[in-house]
Length: 317
Image (cartoon, rainbow, N blue to C red; front, side, top):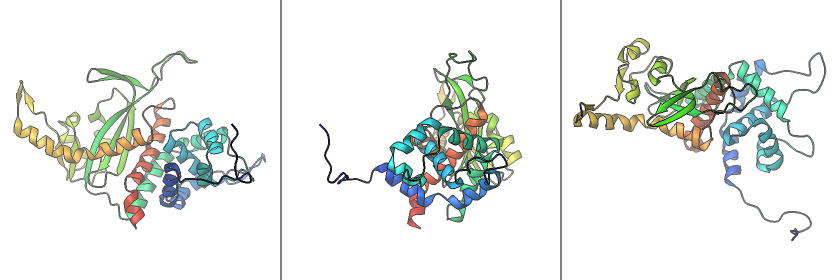
């Protein structure tokens, strides 16, 4: 049965959670600071060959963030913008005056950011903005790693799996993909350092890359045991608060088990950010081949996760 509306206009509406989320992000994301970081590499005009002028930088950045928040591919974000009024409003697109940037334009913008290493730049710019607004990174760092799956099938043009990904066992389960190594602040949970590797790389091998050097304490699980010399070399003033084995020859050391439990109350904070990256923003599987492209996505997603974690604090100011 065909729906009837009053005079062709919809009469009822509701502010959806998506629209509310986008309104919050529109207010909180430091568009000017992030735009200034990208502006030096962004095309300024039509160029000598002529053609269309580039889409405004902030609009492309907003579309890129929509991809990361809602786990959308290049074609999917184009279709979502045509389909969702709240997304078009967020991106500043009026279909009565202009079309949505097509998937090729979206892809070229993403490649521009990847080629110029803008993921790390955007993460640093976001963390600088958070510090200036009262979210300060302290002198304690929590280190952790998480596996992000990749397609293990060889049913592709090359007949091969991604050579930069690898398989690894965790418990009794085997995984194929990459590993995201994260270093986060022990108080605010803000991720400040990221490294990507194949999934079979040991967590402890990335430890030196996850410390900023000014730490006084370093927390981690038992995967980082025995790395006191690495910590001392990178962060001379830091004390090692990584978990220690508490079971020796079948005998449980209850005192060490209790100490590990106390450390885990701090260490578990980084799991909250990993939960936002993987469960809220949907980054549980790689979308691109190779580590570089996925590292860019991971860095920008971590920047957005940092903002998401402290959004209530910023909204009160």
